[in-house]
Image (tube, rainbow, N blue to C red; front, side, top):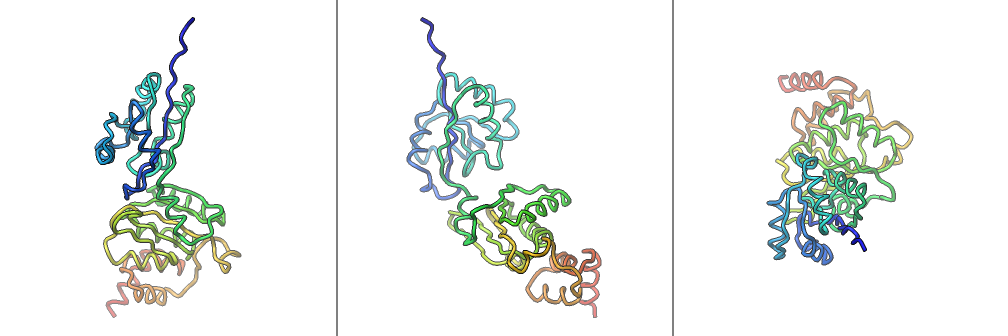
Length: 286
């Protein structure tokens, strides 16, 4: 009688986004019992494994190695169970983990999620906003036209939407959100679950003023709320026609740097950013 071929399971394991106490007992057991761990960055994952005394071998699986590693990992699944982890949080959200899950499923290997920490869920839960429905956008495109188009499409749903962003681009992104979606409620989570965790709750214009003054550090997640009642009846665009000088004066009074104030005032007044900035320079000369 022929022996049936062994079929391993791919475990999609969530890991902490900061606080190591957020890993589950089930995740620790699975990471100990699998034959191999596919990790976004093996050096980062090895720190986690060493902390919990887990000797399981790990190989890299990230956006640059995914295509070459997939066959190797499928071969490993013929021999035993494999765990997939990302640097922080849940694999498959803004990383290539979904490709491996799809390839394993196509090859007939079962996939099992081990749920746990997620910056997305952490911010939604702590935002204080109604989140029966929301849109997840991940990281926005870097090109201005593509970014604005995606934001506008999300804003037109009338639902809250969530993005991930780098700290160095946060100010510019908040400005893009304000221009494309209007001055909606927002929650900005920085360094979630870590020592210096911060959650700003307010409006997009308030967040822009709050984060423009200092150098922002850490991982950032942004949740933009649904339109307020006063906005519901109009398209998700900033109001046009506001007096440019008044807009510049108000924004500078809020503490926004000149370039940020010029960008925002341009949207409010319906002029180009260059015109707004030149006007601001002339105002400072007079």
